[in-house]
Image (cartoon, rainbow, N blue to C red; front, side):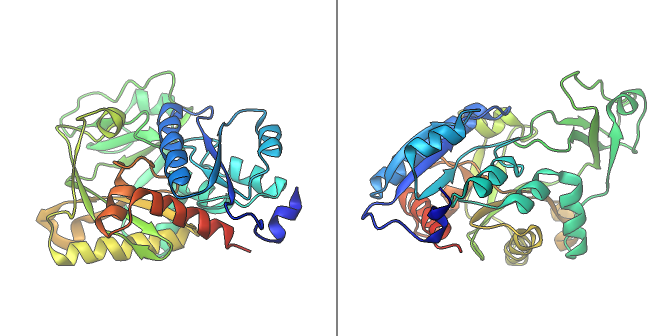
Length: 311
């Protein structure tokens, strides 16, 4: 199996295994991403096998014998370095970021530290016990409480400035959570493809950009290009590429921002980097690719070819 690293298959149409589903809280989103990517890759001329990733993944991959694995998994296991480590051990080329970048990006606390060391703007944050956060304000409101290692706004609590009591966190929250200063302002996001920022989208919702706002029909509106000053547009491009590089990301990533326009450039802060952005034609990163002239099959094809070309 390790011979797959020695060079690309001689087949006219490379074989691609698309990983989707998996065991995380974002399984349904991943199933959608994987289905759409598989369809786009078939349109682009690849031979595609779709695999719902579970404990039998090594056997399923051995049967598929792909030239490259397209990772369309989201959340824990799929984008935290676990499946990436498995791919390295089994000897398959795979798309998106590797073990270290994936693990760093999923661990919000360590990612913030990497951003600080790169001179990028982030809010103050701390890691606290879930029971302590329930018992008292561990930070002056307003603040946000979230799992340190989940994505897609899973389990996010906003504690407003006027809150008299601390948040009553669900039992489903992990034993230790991240608490960070609430960043007011507009929701912006920038995708990076290789070393190129694709654009800036503003995400408009009627409330917090939570899981439903991200994935339910009508939950949010995407404005691309965002109607923001050129200085902020350029800063988003610059910060997103630097964040991508600070974590050691490969292929495609997406950096999310908050911008308090009352403060100008000082009001722009990085929330997080997503190493496995949503991958349907109407998802944020594919929308930005389309805006610069790259349709969805072309984007998926670029991601596969970039992985095939790695040493």
